[in-house]
Length: 504
Image (tube, rainbow, N blue to C red; front, side, top):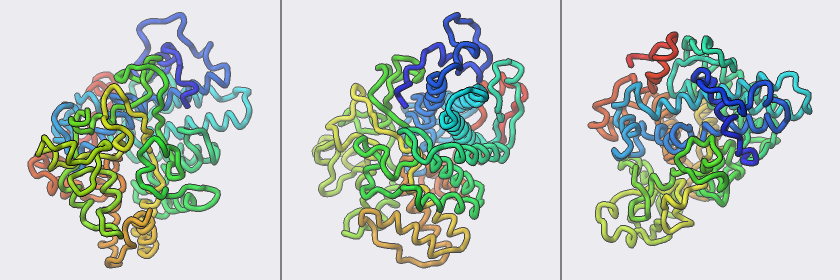
């Protein structure tokens, strides 16, 4: 993907302009519709530009702040008050002027505009059939993925299906969440027919489209439909499987492994500006995610740590060997015998700070196994696993559970439990309600710090209950409107046909 990272600043501006009206200044050197869409290389550059909004530091859904948005509203991680826009979400005091939510909203639409542009311009081009199919497949998947996430985060939003720079087209009413989901469904189905079984690293495949389609169906409680597209992913010709070592999903050494269905690439290419928007030649293709969560004692910024409630979930059951769950020991560091943190004994790191010694520290997606310190001058290049096969397995367990196929549900849960001889097979009650509790617990453990927990609790109708159990003071601010982010005030002010959602 990074072969074409160096898209010109002019092209980036050209592609960005569709979401926020026309550019005020005309650059004679800037690509236009008449000069750009000529070669396969042009389309490869355009496709590459669609991935940048995913990684954008301050608005990318899988970038530093995007990840914080996804995890800050759940009950498993506690945030400090250093980053006001994130802390306000965490404490449920955010409003339509929240800068990070606004950035995410417009990054979604920037990418959608770019995908729409590609789909428009590829029509009638005399390239090879395989090339056209792949480009169309990628652009269609990207549009569907962004719409799925938009509806998941904001609810009802404008449905923009044209790549127009006419200011008049910016005025657009909202479509319902179900209408947005319906478009995402169409895009996932269409892209699955176009994309190859295998693709370059960081690119979606046929399996990626089906995985996202199945997840979309689960969010809509369409259990039969979800099962019908997810179950084939467990069989030939697909070769997905759970990796033996859980930690391989979160380090550099085992990126793009058999468990990875869609992966956001971070690589040591490009420039040195960590805080850039990702669109210029000096933009770093790295992330500060790791340093954000590391302790001060190892050069981190200590923005967040696991909650006591999450640690209770981690420690509820011992592993087959009598130790703590392997996923707990590799997702979080704390003061237990033999614990290592940034290649040193945990107690040695925190010997002069009793409060830190008694605390819990995030390990997942950290460089703790390869570095003695997590410092800003050494950015992190660990790829973000946007979709893992483990998610497919547990989504299938949820489908089977809701279809009353309890043994099948337990079988899927056991695949997660027994990975690497970690936990023993499930031996509890086979009542559906009890098995669901086990499913809920396994998803909490498996996807800790991966941005799934808030949305899981919300769709299960458990959000209020679990938030109150985690922190009654924090929960006191919670209202139903916090189920979704508000449409940014900027959108309401500039798109006069768009109204605010809910009671925001």
